[in-house]
Image (cartoon, rainbow, N blue to C red):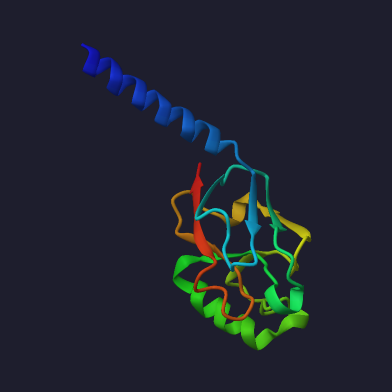
Length: 151
């Protein structure tokens, strides 16, 4: 009986976590001078009318030495988008202009700066395979994570 209650409690806790995630329309990410994001996974709901990505650079290094952004794309193309971002250059925030593979992208920020971007939740499909990553030169290899999309 105790085991059944324990499993029921764990199942309800899992449902509660999914219910909370389903209402999450804002993702907060911090980037450091150690070339890392503070999270590896973020969860949002495709039912959100608008999704907001907020990036805070908690380091002190300038944008030219340790700039960070957050780009969202399907996982299958994230490395190609990051590579093409290098060609786009700093003036374009290392994001190819008009690239249909890019679902959303923040501007580039340096130490102590913040930025955010919003995009329609309808651009994401529940269960889709999405990643968030930094396209500053050399950063995508370490600064990337999974964007989980729920209904």
